[in-house]
Amino acid sequence: MSQAFRLKQSIEDAVIAGEFLPGDRLDEASLAERFGVSRTPIREALLQLGAEGFIDVRPRRGAIVSVPSPTRLFEMFETMAEIESACGRLAARRLTPDNDAAMETAHRACEIAAREGDSEQYYADNRNFHEAIYRASRNSFLADQAFALHKRLSAYRRIQLRARNRLLQSLQEHAGILEAIRAGDEQLAATRLHDHVLVQGERFSDMVLGLAGDRRSDAAGRSAK
Image 1 (cartoon, rainbow, N blue to C red):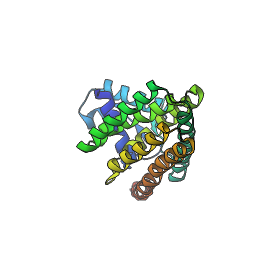
Image 2: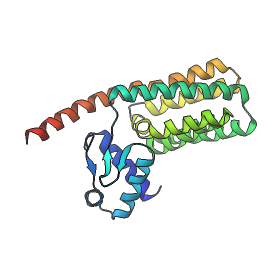
Image 3: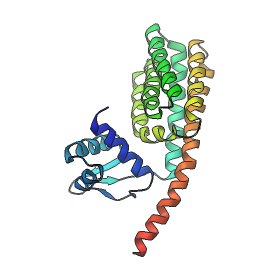
Image 4: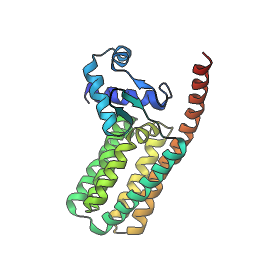
């Protein structure tokens, strides 16, 4: 994992925790001092965040925090659930040995990370598992949409895996999804993927609603100064 990628995750965590508010400017020099690094990896991290749509990179203003409202965030997870459901349905219909092997490899890697309680590694392997399903749909346009929205939600999907017992629950859901796809059961695969992604949204919405209250309090405190 590169230094820039680790910094990207640290900045995501700080934004989601409300340490930076919507509209705040992410200053390279201040961030470099905060994390004890040079400005180069900070710049790279901000570019990655901008490419994923997690922050806005504006001419002459630099990187600006852009956090969706809890309602908007849940809507995004809801849309993600529908897209992944379609991928699962098509994967069950069109599964090839190569696609099956890719899903199996990612699932086994998730098992190791879950057993070790490593949520960061689990997220990386979890991403590979979902992307293997997108490819297994053998619909490149649908897969592109899934890749794009998954990338946009990556920080939030990563954070929710820290919830108590979520790694093992997620792993069990993966096993059920894989079973349905291999059985060629299109409806069951679609339903299990839909429920799996929407559970992420529901779990995370609770976290975000709490953070939203913290942000309002913080913003009020700033205004009072």
